[in-house]
Length: 203
Image (cartoon, rainbow, N blue to C red; front, side, top):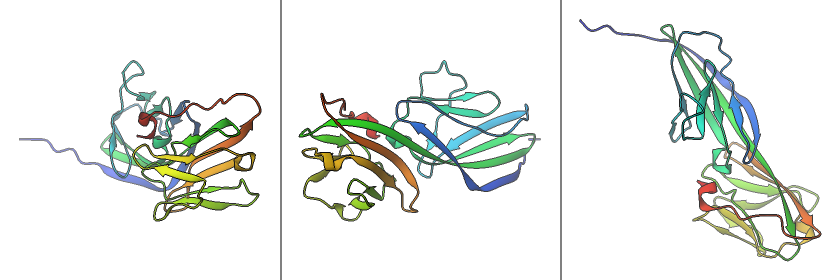
């Protein structure tokens, strides 16, 4: 006779905000002290995330402690909503997280600036470079300035020839208006410090 394991459920609807720097690491805290954890699942609205058991694995996502999850070498496409489901003692808990990623870029006047911020969950991009917040890109209508264009293949928002008036903060928002990515752009007086992101950074 086969035994059947059933789980009761405890779900939290509010999201826990987590913020990390691009190329840095973040830890998703499970807030659970029970040692008898059978399994953890981490997933977004579109995919299940493979979580290694230890940091020694080759992937960027691994378990730490009882059920904390570390995401290392953050890229912009990591930003967004996550759900962590914890199974323990015939019970389960579900926690929701919103991951925000920030970066700083210094650009020389006249250079082309590529920001790989048009991730799959991006709905619009706003900037305060003019002193007030305004949209410079939307999912429905594309770029809002003739000095910009976008590369859908690489997810790049491109300023063709950077001016000091382009310096400021750029925010990428999802369809619910939550901030996915913040990029602070400053003018470099000497050499270009920004390195174009490879295609893998936008995936």
